[in-house]
Amino acid sequence: MLETIKNLKGLPNVKEPSFQALRSQAEIFGTETIWGNYNFVSTVKNRSAGLTVYTGSDEVMNRNWSARQREIIKGVPDTLRLIQEYIKQAPFIYVRRNMGKNNVFSPLCNLFVSVQRKEMIRLAYMWAQTLSPPLDTPGPQQYLVYIPEWQEKDRQILVFPEVSTTFVLGSDYYGESKKGHLRMAMWNVKQQGMLGLHAGSKIIYARDTKTNNIKKYGILIFGLTATGKTTHSCHDHGLDLPGEGIEILQDDVVFLRKDGSCLGTEKGFYLKTEGVNPQTQPVIYQAATSRDCIFENVFVNYRGEVDFDNETLTSNGRGVMQRDDFGKLKGEDINLPPVADLDGLIILFITRRNNIVPILSKLNLEQAACAFMLGESIESSGSDPKRAGESVREVGTNPFIIGDFAEEGNRFYDIISQYPEKVECYLVNTGGVGEIVELLDDGAKVVKQKVLRPEIPETAANIRNIVRGTIEWEKEPYFGTLVPKRVAEGIDIDKFNPQKFYTATQLELLINQLKEERRKYMEQFPKLYPLIVKAFK
Image (cartoon, rainbow, N blue to C red; front, side):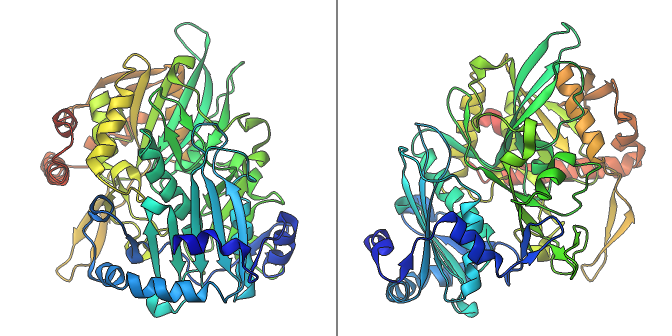
């Protein structure tokens, strides 16, 4: 089968159009907006996570699969036979792109899209806008085959990481190709001693309050979809003193090396458009309203006017925006320098919890590795709209890990612990505090007390004060971290104190509940370093 895929581009049913041809042919099937860019509407509006399986060695397949996923795995031989015959006959578009710009690890990504439904050419166009044109790089070669017209009852995503091949069957959602290649790349990079991170990256120049000198920080921002990872990867944080500023590098996946540097992957960022506005997200808004941004499942009326807050079609509206449209805030490179070349590396773990987790906590390195393993957040409409808003834990806030989870956490700790004087780690809760939810007998949930959520400018203020060194810290009594006692400006940190929202009994109950959940969750990883398991109180 792999040989068939490798030779597919030479068959008469496969065409390789230029980028301009892709664009002009795809835009025929879109809706033009008032900004001159285009919106496309897919039938499937989120990733088919529950229909995705990994196939290969025991290391790859060591998962708790659902009954449906086990059925898919059982049927793989028959499915492959059907695919092998079909791809020789159906019309396909072929696009070749490079992931990353470096001479260490830069996969050559091959995409084949069936255009039996002619409008599916948009998938090839969106893909071409996400990665860079092919370069002479070390590889490896990766392959992804899209057959959107596959029978709906048999929709599935088959991943063969050890031969760098993925099949997307029965879905026309663009996120499957983007994440499909990134998933394979994260597996491949792990085999080379690096670590694929579901994290944004940037460089911040900030004036240090103690020395009055400008310091250069590398920033890594972890977070599941819809937690604020892209928002804060592309935010200037109000850094407006002379000499201050940011360089936007990446917003989704980077590859962490032993020297603390991170290799970038993409030229186009896959934005969740919900709530985008020029007041709180001016940088993103500028890029999203440019001619080169491509929208997917965003509400556009008959006049071409865009309403980012209208969720009639889906709460998972998306856009592929270009780094080039960030103007002066775009980093010259997509790679984060080694720790040795920086004044510090700041790692932010973005979570969304709605009750007792402080909106900002400072972590030691062991707690950072534990936070990496816990990956606490909420489910988003991007992966499972039926569970959107539910509490979830995902190692590395990364739904695309293949292989042993403990290996990921141990390797992450091994790398950051080499630089104890330069690496700072923080847990940033964009969910808020204070929520009280009552569970009824029928399983329904009733919100008895609403969450107090930090606004984007308030979270940005916390980050600004971190890099300027203008936060006074104190010990947090419940989990063993540090929390702000005083923040110089931009936010009233005291109003987010969880103790203001609960009685002593309620607080104790919620704290013990969270600790017990964490303890049980960490029991899944017997190979994880004990110092990581026991990092939180």
